[in-house]
Image (cartoon, rainbow, N blue to C red; front, side, top):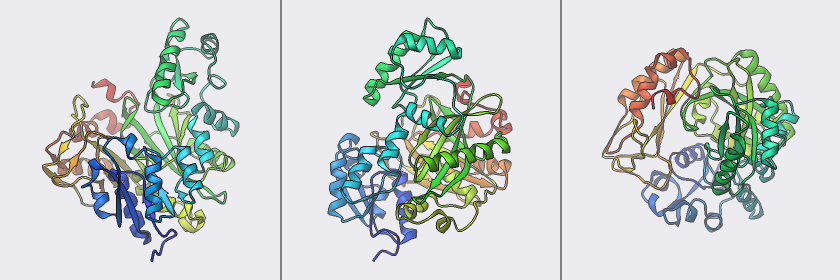
Length: 449
């Protein structure tokens, strides 16, 4: 008999996040069901969940993205909640709605809120209405090349064209003159249509060397909202994050407090619930501008857990069960120290070429202030069908210097044999003088490659 808020939870995901959710459920005394593709038959989530059901072949479209198969697995195993993790169906409003229609609690925001936040230009308009700072840009989706040129001329170059339903850098083009706009608009629309089944594109002012800052949100279903501080996510390549830390080494306290209070009001007003992340760009003056809302748990959530002591996945589950944030948090949120996360990916550290395969040797680091979230194991296989994440390495210290020192120590002790990993790249980042000084932006990695 489960002692937690749900009798059984199905995890509609794979890899390290599936194992992370299993751990949270074990802490709460809740039995779990893992779903898996044929490629993941021997994975750790399958081994450690209370039940496991194969939902299809390796290809995601026929397994982890197959809503009927996942709902069937949930009904067969008699679960009363589904946790989607991140990626796959985590921000799919239709999936959340199907869960609701099936009488299964979706551990995340309501379908209507996911849908609103998933359309970037709509989310941008909503945030603007509630006073969250946004970049100058078009009023919604662009209807013609002429409107795009007129808007770009008004706000000044360079400008960026963005897919409204986009993510991961796809459907984005930077224009430096009026002559470039029509052609780049067509390119962005074509790429957006192919990638997201929506050719809608909007336009905003382009910041050439921004920092990427995001705020962690927790909101219950009773109107209580907490902003758990920010994460610095500027170390990235082609819009894919490589290293994250909290707090940001450059965000001014007054900006943090002002944006947090504005976000608290906006999140409450739109009826958001569960965990989420609000992403911003920071310009050279240190001002923040809204980009998007990620209506799910983030890959980099452990850095916030390290500095707050709050288990965000357990909080997600308890919020979905109807508990209030005061019950869950037990008092004011206190942030302590500094945390850094390195994403250890199965890829060549010089070329970023994927490196799937069998892990023939593995040593996971430990010691004071070190956490490793991973689904990797000796003789385990990193399949070629999914993202290349092998592990997340988190270091926490009393300040940024100690966190860096502990991360460098942990990277030296981290051994993965049989495949290439990004460990050498992270060592290079941690030893870079500009990184150590906190002097970097989203172009940091681009300087090397």
